[in-house]
Image 1: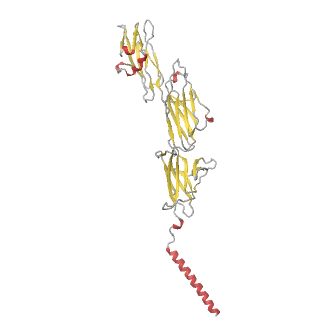
Image 2 (image 1 turned 120 degrees about the vertical axis):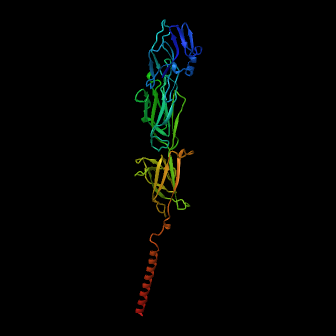
Image 3 (image 1 turned 180 degrees about the vertical axis):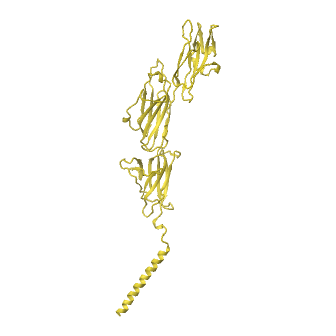
Length: 406
């Protein structure tokens, strides 16, 4: 916060000294000056140099600062946010009492009041654009506590979070970087359902809050496979920031060696990121061979998925490496011991129609009859020779027996 001289009193000459154009910004009558309110906004662009600066402070941690012992006059107060997140209005401080016979310097308390309000929304650390069904996600909403004049008729301040494809489960509020547990209210979150908006109502009686940063951290649970979005609004800004998220799905198809045939009946277990335990899924009753990620204790949960018609799809998954282990091969084919690894990345393209990341791949099996012989041709030769010896021996036995009877 910096304070610049606009008008000062030359006591020796009993006159006002102007550092800006007098006729544009001030009116002088009866030895007193008054600010032209309509022109006040232009003062922020007035040419004022460092020599005009009479008071300066940095790292202000409160929204009100008191200047002391400034000479009689009028001063421009410039307040800036080093992060560029807050825009403050033009403030003019007068360090004397209007109407007094003798002018005497006064201390002036300056309260920072934003001239405009914005609202932004972003992912919290640990939350990504690709999510899985049932995952807990967090978002951060940032805005500014509004200022209210004494004559304000509407002193409400609200922040509303609207989820799509998720259910809000937690709200945390921070003011000026500090977590607060009072001064606001919102609905009972235990009764909130999926896709229900939640509005936070702030208490606005405390002027010390005016102009301070406000952060609302929203915790939610993903409840849908598609259409996942979160929006935020405040009643003091027209901004409607939002963030989009997506789930992913993988379809694996069984093929023979030359990929001319689709093989039916294979079964798999799926492991993520080299985990020791396979993932759990529930089978979709309306779509063939489609399975949705679930918790181990969910109704119908299974670790075995079946490609009864040649392809199997898992959905509701997030980014990571997924290993398909073949545990049952199609009839007449051998198990592919290598399985198949498929990676889902945040950089993968989102399918515009399904609004999810779609990955596809194939896994080949070898036909049992086409397996190479492991015994070599020696066994075949010995088998044939053995059979011939047995036939010859049998023939000699019957011939000798016939001679004996004769």
